[in-house]
Length: 170
Image: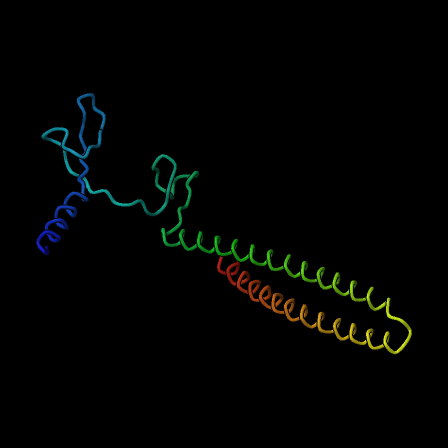
């Protein structure tokens, strides 16, 4: 079994590396191929592009239309990653802000309903007791919503700080 795995590895390692040959065609043009075109075909080494991109392959220092490429692919990936993270954080901030607004509307709706109940209390001992219980319920509702809203506001603040750090990195 080990031999099979080792031989398979060698075969795939050999086939994954392909030579590129430069050939001069009879009409004088240059062609590139993965197989020798003629006996005079020469293998060439292909390296990944790096450095400065210029118009028509001219030297970067002499070309007015030159475009400076990012120094490394890691830089491009890091910048794209920061942009994606920034977008995700902004979406989270927007979602949490809408949730806070929704909670505030719900709080006001519940308080309005309790105020309406409170207005129906009679001007006697039973009414006063009922009015007091409604006031306690209103305090509990405010406390419950306040805790949820403060928690979300703290998360929005934390996300905003993270967003500011990403902006400074760019």
